[in-house]
Amino acid sequence: MSKSSQPLQREVFSCADLLKALADQTRLDVVRFLLGGSAHVAEIGAELKIEQSLLSHHLRVLREAGIVRAIRDGKAVLYSLAPAVNSSGRKKDRIDLGCCSLTMRS
Amino acid sequence: MSKSSQPLQREVFSCADLLKALADQTRLDVVRFLLGGSAHVAEIGAELKIEQSLLSHHLRVLREAGIVRAIRDGKAVLYSLAPAVNSSGRKKDRIDLGCCSLTMRS
DNA sequence: TGGACATATCAACAGATGTTCATACCAAGG
DNA sequence: CCTTGGTATGAACATCTGTTGATATGTCCA
Image 1 (tube, protein in one colour):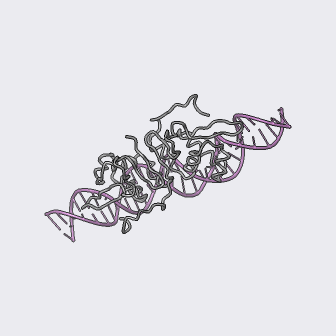
Image 2: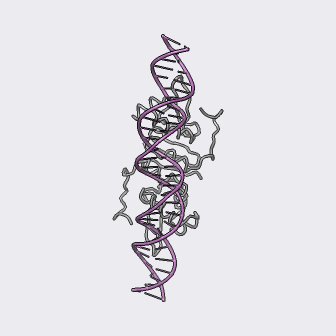
């Protein structure tokens, strides 16, 4: 599902590319949801009320941008924010894109 | 060129819409440049080395998103970050979008 | 092994977006 | 006024993007 290790591929994507990955209502919703912790695809789909296939496409965009991470969990797949993206701060409201960081309004 | 006053139209644009406006290499360059202060279109064009018409189109996107402001200055037009967007902090590295704020890496 | 479940991928399409070129608009000076 | 410089707008186009429906892949369990 991904390369061998967690590459921390900063500088591979431009800031514009990363923002493009986030600049979508559905994907923003996914990211906001994942700020609260990991979740299986089915949970995310239930929360956002969107089709399975559509969600999968959006998750792919986020994955390929290095924003989220996918881990097999039985038949399901567990998604979480990529470690590099998860801000080190206590408050779970920030996405660290490398080029810039994005603080969600509470 | 704009409505009568400075409306502070928060909530009119979704966070995704605002991010879309920023999620472009050229427009990000413009915004980064304007973080350093106001500038005429010609200056921005010289800095970014892009065609006049293309720049104008991109400036329009930023304007309509409420991210930048345009003021006539003789035959030229002076662009600056919209007041609402300019972060109150001392460091000129943040864009406040209302829904979220974006901190540029120094 | 076969079937059910969870997710990913493929193909196709409509609509949005970035770019270019031509043209229109606006302000200042002669 | 007419012209010139600076910027905005419009049309046309190729490309990218989001969405859908159908199908494939992977995993568990009987």
